Amino acid sequence: MNTVANHSNSVVRRAAALDWQDIATELNEYGCARLPGLLQEQECEALIADYARDELYRSRVIMARHGFGRGEYKYYSYPLPELIGALRSAFYARLAPQANRWNEAMGIDVRYPAAHDDFLARCHAAGQLRPTPLILKYESGDYNCLHQDLYGEHVFPIQMAILLSAPGRDFSGGEFVMTEQRPRMQSRAEVVPLRQGDALLFAVNERPVAGTRGYYRVKMRHGVSRLRSGHRYTAGVIFHDAL
Image (cartoon, rainbow, N blue to C red; front, side, top):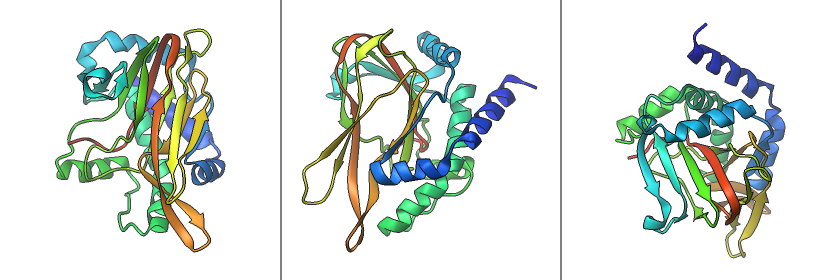
């Protein structure tokens, strides 16, 4: 069996082994759900090592130049690395029903097809042709401002981040932070502790919250707090493509 098939089959099995009812509960309650140990240490280290291979990427962004924070990231080119592509396809298929439930609750007419290729065809027909999976690199003093990864008209409402470095060994600080803005209320912050290989599923833009008069929308943003020391790498798996 070839390497691509091995990655694909392994990731599909890992996704199938997760408790998706618990994941849905966490996403609905908090706007995020942690997946402990999704990637193995050697997989994390391989993705970090590939950061130096410029031929894998379509662009490099220095965050301070754009007011995004401090640090840098690179967007992968098509074809995506085998592991990243397998994660994108397998987890989209598992998350599409949740995304459709969210849109229904928020009164949004858009529905997402079951297969990721069909959703990408929708993105590409609208001119969103550029791949969005990326890898981020932070050094001491770096941080990521609160933001949303939208990129165009077609937005899948959930995305994934995977911590590739080991807290305490490779870096300190650099916590994943989310904020939630409910109507006429102050923002609520959520700090999510992650270990090497842990993934986090989280809301990209808006999510529904049940109120006394039905569901209402809350606005979500995410970022990374200041790195105190060391180096921190994260892979981001975004399911829509960019203009």
